Length: 188
Image 1: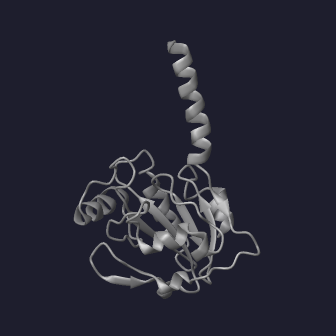
Image 2: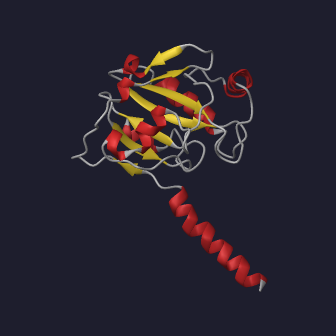
Image 3: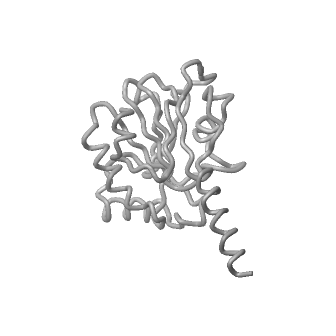
């Protein structure tokens, strides 16, 4: 009986993992119905920031968490940001949506990121990225009727969305794709 349970659990992990870590790429014919530049967000220090401020640059939007197995990706996100500042902005959106892995306050998150990973890229205040109370920006990222092609919300922490210089959702990368991977670098 234990063997059957372990085997079925392994199959769930394997097949569930395929769904869990799925990414995607924009079809050529996709058209956004609303511009990402219509959105703004609140930085972790409380000031408002319009996404329109980043026109002409690619934007990598990442939902982040401080107590996740993927948390060390902060280091590569910072490196990606620092080495590509002239053409890319990385924005981290702390979220406690996945197994409570971001329980801290905005001040605690900001300090954690700065002290442990030297983060200088923009961080938002803690938000929801899934569910009925997800932030409007994440609604745009995960609703086909708004972005033109994608209906996948983040499956876990450190799920990445790449936005073009003209504000179109280009690609999604699952949590397992590291920020300095060839896959992301080639997309820049």
